[in-house]
Image 1 (cartoon, one colour):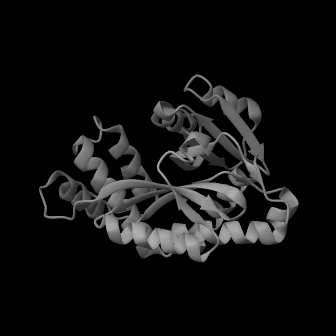
Image 2: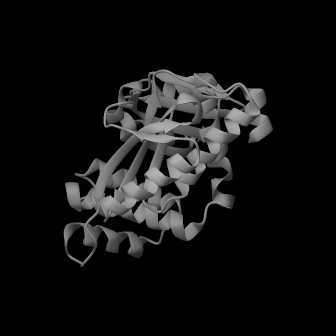
Length: 248
């Protein structure tokens, strides 16, 4: 498992304890609202909404709160109109970064993201400058005891084309269209799905071999992730296990 994937797994493990619940709820509900606005309120006919709905429920967001977000998205209730934007740029040491946001004020959010990057050794780039270094994928993280044969049997027919294990944690990935099928297949096999989401996976990576370099890059990533409008941050760093353990 690459250093970037390992970091994502570490973050997931500690997220329940570290992340501020109110901020997490707000971000999930914003995703639900936008999914409903773009594809309608029928969960069975809107796979994006179904995925966001399930993520919100798994995070213990109350069902009635999610339902209200869906109604805001479809216009049944008054709500804010959010715009989806992806910012591209570079963290320190040439690490490519893609920042996905949902915002009701493009100018404010863009200014804040630019300032955050520049104050911490990074910079924004023109659209398309770093996107070619990533591809959208379905990514599942599986927890609990599982052997390779069980994971492979459960996921290969559902569309998985990459299965990696590290320290008892499995990462399964496949084409972006396979997310719902992969999640259903792993659950049907009795495997514990820790997370299931679309991610921008790097096709090339920048290795950060020292603790100082790793800390500088991870600080930028964490500050971006903490921004209220930011929904996801993708980066192409790779950190060796020994360095990651030292800074993690």
